[in-house]
Image (tube, rainbow, N blue to C red):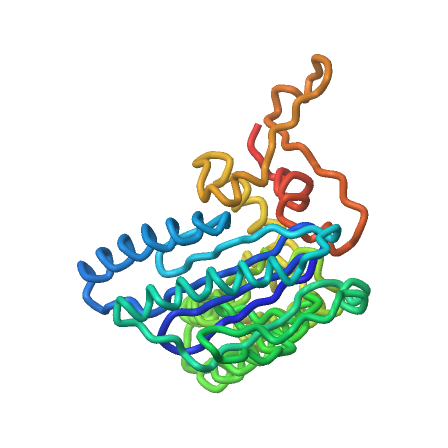
Length: 325
């Protein structure tokens, strides 16, 4: 999969566009300029969502919307020979969206970036794509983008995101170490959970299938935090696994699996959000089996490691491990 994304940092609307040689192109538009007043924000979001949906549908694009974020998808396949025509349609959609924002008193942030997502092999063989243009301004390509607090690199290895996360965890762990002698065990555990563990748990389901090196980095950061919380001579003999057990903390890889399982269970129970529910299909055996009553999900056939990290594959295979009978 290759994706061209155009995020804008700071206040103002954000445009993200994408191209997928495996069968999907994507245009994401995120509206970040929401008034501070709650009632004005509600009216603004409702009005914006309605107009953006109608604009996207006029260009045969799919759309996803939640709070202050809207994502628009335009499908492509590797068999397409008129990529220029699709890009022209994409540019036309962006132009209409830009005009709508200008008409409603909104301005585009000039700090936009573009990026192509995909495996190294696909990006190497991907045809040359001209620099995208929005409102007459060219958007340069970047090696990574940051969206909703997650840093995404071109190959979706999440190496830079993990490095940034470990740096942040070590910073707060070091700060906690300075004041640890003045804290009780209960307060130290609470601070560690709220300041550090919460960062480890944020969007950690995206780390499913990441490299062992990234998992090891995060585990070392968690072990360092547990060592600070359970500091003291009478606890120096405890191993890393024993410290995590005493604190009732799951290891990093199990936290990732648990988040994936919890998300899958909520989606099945509530059928929300719709864009994720549409990726899950119930398992229907060809004949009567005991597994028919277990509410299993159908696991799609995937042949690449890159594809095995998709939610449509991970959720049915790994997210159902903790599903209640």
